[in-house]
Image (cartoon, rainbow, N blue to C red):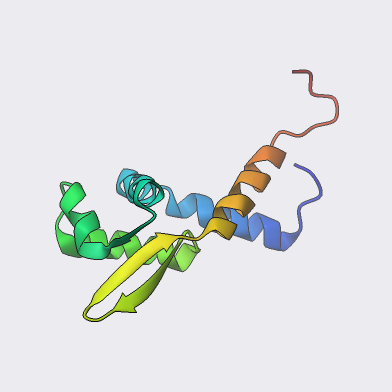
Length: 102
């Protein structure tokens, strides 16, 4: 790893931890495909109860992967592009040893 700060390590760990469940990965993929989506519509695409999907959305939101805004009685979610960029950057640095041969 390049010269990661303590904040980099914590950010990477939090983002990676949030991806630790297949349903959360599926939710992220769905939001990437749709751009934004109402929580209930996301629940319709998964074989999980709406309350379970809501908990997964909360984990993703708390980790910074997604953002939500209130639209009347519903909550609309979208990807947080800066978190994806940060995660991609950090993943790219995981094995960026100067002596590594491709």
